[in-house]
Length: 376
Image (cartoon, rainbow, N blue to C red; front, side, top):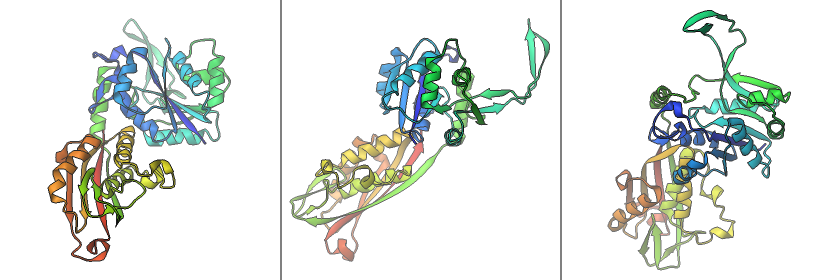
């Protein structure tokens, strides 16, 4: 079942104050939209971002890999319709429509919306109203409003793609959200349990509240990687991005940089996203002789797309020769340049196996790496 997401980010959000629209203001060091994008990317195969034309350069500078980027309209429903039209060629089975200004949407909410679409045409999170409700005028209470059956709507609002596309195409009057559009078209929408943390940023105070929530919800991941390559013919080896003269070369489908492969697998492991072989199959001839920085850059980008930054990297090379010590600083610098983290957060060290095993017999080199990812 293919699931696409439309992130609606074309509004100006002036009530939040500041020099930028709310979706571009910083939250824990990154724009709000970057947090939202990461949450949706974990669940959706295709991401369509709907932007204001003035924000296209901002998105480009953010370097997040949306599958589709489209310019929105003057109203929210016009922007959503632009996103739905942009998905026509892909035609996903399901689509989740989410406000960019809700950066703390949980994995549970997204999963529950998708699950509910197995039996309903639409599904959306909401929270039952518990407070007393009044009507008022001129600063005075004029009456009480029955709260039974009232809910506070949230996003993402999920639908079968063809059904919601048809509903938007036929829309002839303004609608507050996509559930309203669906209901005007006669679609049944299930309510799933929302979350108080799934706040929509409207005012400056909302941004402060979300910052405080993020301080308590930091996600820290640890991953490890292990790789081995045997010696064969050659006059050099690649280790952690550095070419070192040697009497033999390491054999592999790519450049056989055992250290960089272990680091790459450590990042994939922390993300729960497999290993190099899954992302770059050795059966694919295009990766024959490929430089390993390609793999590491891919892992780093995946981490960023999923809302993580790399905190530190620790790599140990196990070999008798060549000697690693003279090259440690250069190796750290090479890894820092690829990952974008400070070299002071990178450790490259070496050990022998006391002449034991295949490394002790100088049949090959092994590498072990550990990395820590922190939600950003």
